Image (cartoon, rainbow, N blue to C red; front, top):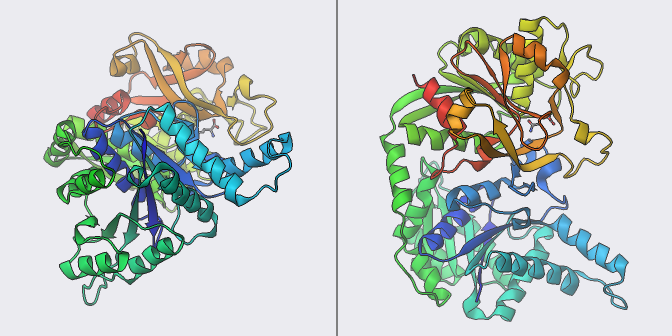
Length: 533
Ligand code: GLN
């Protein structure tokens, strides 16, 4: 029988509910239970694909081409498993489905309402995911904070599920912020008290309260939270700040969260086997050699915009025993001359040209690429970053004046990057890019072949544009050669690399989405090992 654990949030969003959820799921996976995780996003967008990274951070792409919330990335990385687009449920999907059913006459005669029609749709989707994964446990993180109007139908569905599935089959974990007053150092529990009260008002009694705090909870704060939340003190868990998010499962385990939850769900509490995880953490601690990596993009003011990439760098660095030091360079500032790249890139060991969309900051990226190419600095271009490498070489090596991507300049005389033929005629924006895992054929003898050690690989994608194959011969003669193509369609260029350069590789794919602590990306390993030499 499948059991369900709902994770709600209080006080503030972005306090690390996703990492907490992923950590608890990892503990149960390590106890040999079959787990899966769902993220519920109460907004009306059908998926995260159309949202600005500044609003919600990175758009995470699943194997099956879902454009999902970045928390799905945390779950995949912690659990070392692939999830599907179905693991990210949004209010947009729910309402869309209900309205379509109404139009088809599936509720004929009924007044269609939030309760029961919307809540039924929510419960059905949660149970379907559980069934698909044959899960012993489904962890469901409800986005936003308790008290948000748009979150109510989801909390109501969760409340109903406890009644329908039985008390021992549904549990609730509430994650909330406990701020510390700077002046007195006092931990303030009032906001948590209020958010738990709000939960109880709608009929949900949390079983465990996880306090996000700067340092472990003081005994007084802990007993206060326990009393006001109506839970035993041992069910109040401190999730305090750590330098490395991958330590969170260990922190929670030490406070016996897994035991309390297993007991609550009438599950056998086995000893979590975390030895591979612990040896990864040990590698991170032992990695001291600093390697300076420039991160060049236009959303650098919100680091979550590139979270899978920074995590991929961290995974590969631990594998190599090096300590990455990130230097964030905002490409618009380079473009406008506010950043002196000669100065900023002088002490850099390697650079990542980050993905993106639209014109802003692109000339800044191109300027940085030129410097990195000419100064033999190991450089990896991801998707848009790769496309701009192509533009830079077209302009500055081949001499194609005003060469550009058609996305940025539709009138360019040299559209070295243009709309993929498969994208022509598509007019809707949502979910219509070339998305998800696609097989790639690597050319023997290339640097990427050496990095992956295989001819056929699979990486995830999210793009509409690609290298214009009409220019391939000119690029080849300039020493910028194709090293990987799409297996099904060899006219889609997947990898290019520069000869006579320590490492200058561009990929149309997003290898960061498949990188995990226990399975780092071969391309990142290769890049960072060059950067650390
Ligand atoms: N804007 C580019 C395209 O659509 C690159 C997208 C990306 O970097 N993910 O092809």
